[in-house]
Amino acid sequence: MERLKNQLITEKSIRLLQQNQYTFHVDSKLTKSEMKNWIEQFFDVKVEGINSSRVRNKKKKKSSSNFTSKKKMIARLRANYLIPFFLN
Image (cartoon, rainbow, N blue to C red):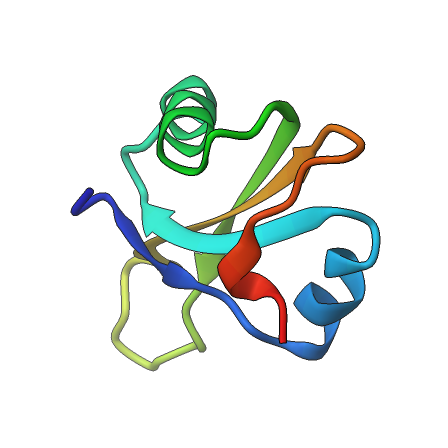
């Protein structure tokens, strides 16, 4: 899926893994329901909920937009489900 850019690995996203939440950078046009359906089909898991936010640019002098084309989504999985390649 070209709309899913990559997984996000930060200190916060690693802490969220303990709560069964997975963080991804996605295309800004992707909706929560599309993301939920894709994760459930591709990884064969059940998603409890999705949170999303836009990633802000650093301020530039001549920039008219404060947003990039990226969006960050956090997927909460139901109990007893996990995405295996995040484990290490």
